[in-house]
Amino acid sequence: MRGDPHAGAARRKLPKGLRIALAIGLLLVGGLFGFVPFVPGWPLGLAGLVILAEYFPAARSVLNWARRKAGLDPAPPSGEAGRGGKSNHGSTQAFRS
Image (cartoon, rainbow, N blue to C red):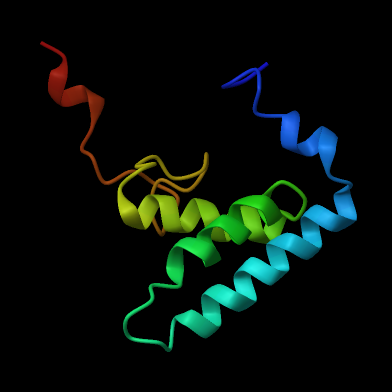
């Protein structure tokens, strides 16, 4: 089991369809509040994205991209070390004597 053992409590209480509807609602409200200058909408949109990432791979990809952009998850997915698929971090031969 990963993370907090009580993290699944919300999943057991709300049906999947209701959780997805809640997440879409949070995304919509976050998007609407994005146009209001004194109310930040991004936390609501981010919460909706986190919920949707549990069910949809596309939402998970967007969430992972946002984490990398924010510096919270610096490692790219396996196989994507750079644009060409190769690392730009020099050779291991430089460390050999």
